[in-house]
Image (cartoon, each protein chain N blue to C red):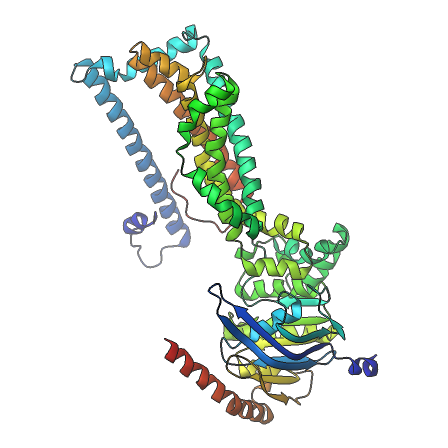
Length: 272
Length: 292
């Protein structure tokens, strides 16, 4: 499986461009000649200055958006509409506030035509794994930010996605909760090794979690450089940040990223 | 906002006061405040009615035009026990209610369906928005004579008027509610595997629900307006017809009595609606509602 799989990457973006046309008819380029390869079971983090088009890459992989030029391939095949193998964790709360926790987690299997009993069973199972069994009947507004994020993870993982896309999923959480969620994510991911694209603006988060870090240029985004992260797994996120190699990685990548961040700030202040 | 006065009234406790004592004191303060609100409400009601009665009695105002609370109560009593000029009071009330209720349900169901339909389809909504705006700028009551001319003096013309009054309010809110549905939530549902219909049912409709309910509160009043205006213009029975007859015979008490009847019925409907809404919206964060 592994040898076979290494021949076909899980996710491939080949010379992809994405342009938006505003209602006034002006064209805006978000992505330009973008190339990315994610091997099966690989955890890829994408960092770049704010507003550079990181989220656009994810939308292209889900099939919610189409590339203006170039090609997106999943498991060797083209993307036609929303792919059932894809799971997505959003930055903001995307839970359904009118459903309680278990109904939120059950949503995926029910949408996909599983029976109610089957959906309930696997929802219970996933709630146990994220440690929320006692909160089945709670509504999202009754939970803390970290707990809501765990529900989101359960809601996404219950569909057993082979491809997991995460759009700054933990950026709204406080620092301590975020570290806990990193551990949680790595634990869940290690069980089934989905191929992950994790978009973030937090470089340390990227290095701590990923096998490979992509640095993007200030918009229109294209890949500036790719850094393999050779830190041993399983990683303990709370401790890894004090290891010299981790710090070394962060410093190297930050040197690279800084120019882009500064450029993006300069542009923003010129535009203002 | 409602608890600022409470805060001001809250006593400062000695050090070492137990939680139970503080809770008991807070509970007592809350009850006192509730009683004070009720007391002042009653004072205002009694004051206004008393002043009216007294003014009519002393002929400071002309009872011929302004009637008096006792006159109105007597007219209501008379209607209840002896019936009105146009048959029993309950029958007339029922006629109006029937018109309003049919118009209300038909209008709100149609409003919700069309609102969600157009809200989900950008192309259709671009086409129809101009017509809807145009029709919406017609003051609906001017349609009453046309409906009466086409559909006659009976039920149909009043239902049509109530319908058209309710439809646009509910439609506009349902449409807006659909447009306000969270885009991430929709994307989430789609990626989780929802079909278009499932997205509509599980995301769009629930998130438009609070908008729709807000409009239903007002629109029952609109349905009543439609029914009564229709009866003014031409009818054989109904509360509007009673008011019309009272006007023709210079019976001020009769007019006020009819108004009070309609007011009570609408209040009742409003209460039922609030009950249904609270039950449906149990997922929402508890909010500070105004004191009941």
